[in-house]
Picture: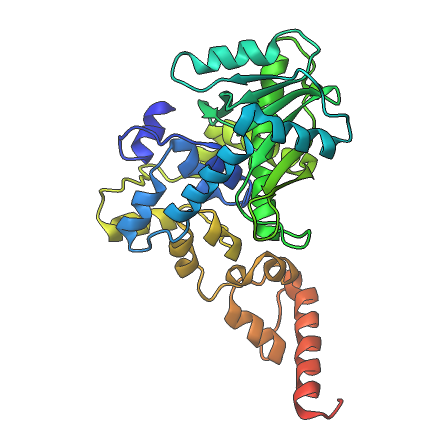
Length: 356
């Protein structure tokens, strides 16, 4: 199995996952291409560059610097302000005598994090940058949440500190959604840690504390994110990737995604493994622009709601032909064809002002 996965990625070392990449796996769970490449640890950024469709997302240096400065501000004075924010948001009194444990550094961080987070005790505690682990496609991934608040309201709470603002009580929905799924990765890893040590994994709350700047100031404000739905999706996708042999059964023999291969050869190889492109991929997958080019003329390129509404109609040209009534639909396309003809009639009525 490992030899096959090594062949797929071109013989190089597998790329390491982190919380962002693990979270991105859940964005398009039906995409076989991404599941295969991520299971093999393929270098998708290098693939995109080689194919001539480089990725165009990621944080700017300015955003990273701003985020680091905001996190340092929130954690100042031993996390006193952060403790107050978390306690108030959880609806409990601000505890006195809470401990602050910095788990950073390079000296056996996984071991120190495991010992600190599973130690018995009932006092309030804050753990800065613990290092957690999660199995992804048979490999151990190290994850570093911003902070874990323990034994507040009787449970552990993951705390995520983000630099995007909350303006008039509202934040960018896309950024909040990304923070929720990334936090779910940490919640799952922390639950698995407690379970491995014989403790109740439900001690880790499904409610994550999100700390962001309020309005256009650097004053922090906390809110709660319920990540139960994200946990369900994450577990399903990780379980799918754990069955690597099932994924590889659908991959042609000799398939490789070697980023040093000839671009035409590489593109032809990728075409053999089905993708499930959707516009959402542009913000989460390095190969999104290649897959969008490949999906041109397909209903999937218009988004999941359109693809699902049109059922088995794959080509945009077929959609137009069915709407105009110049093509007889296949049996599985009959319902979609009826909807398309009705939509075409409605459009004609709106444009002409003459109801049929």
